[in-house]
Length: 124
Image (cartoon, rainbow, N blue to C red):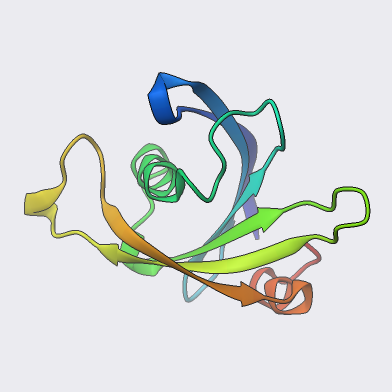
């Protein structure tokens, strides 16, 4: 069930104002977060700021990072189709949370749109 659908503003690299779309789905087993890149002019990409965005989302929306499934999304642009990636993070121990960072060391693996739809119970 989708509980949040909003544009998140964050400070990207070089303190550059940046933004992305965040959708949060509370599912029985986990919370699925889809971070969508908004394209050129939106600042630091969701790929380059994954740790910072995920940490901010966990903090602002009180999401347990151990229950979170993070999906990175690049919407269709011209001839290029939508792309989705599962992003897995190392969850930092609370004693290492500094400056709001709760996750680190992201790693990406591709997902199909069909798999994302199955994760959230609807078309992404």
